[in-house]
Image (cartoon, helix red, strand yellow):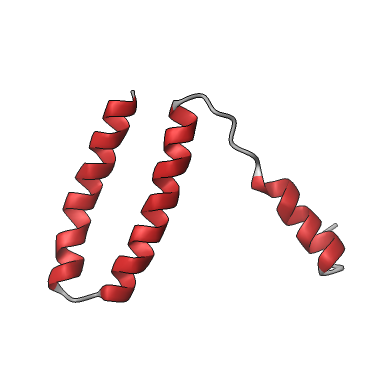
Length: 72
């Protein structure tokens, strides 16, 4: 399964990156690289059956306690 994940991400990168380089879209390439890195790391952790923390609890803490906003 890990091998298929790596092949899938390499395929996505080979499909998208050459066009971004050819168009000299450096900012888009930086954002694409950043987001793909996060996506790959999270996918790899899930593939290896490592528990990924849920970001909702931290977001709720931030909104409720630090920003003093109520969403109810």
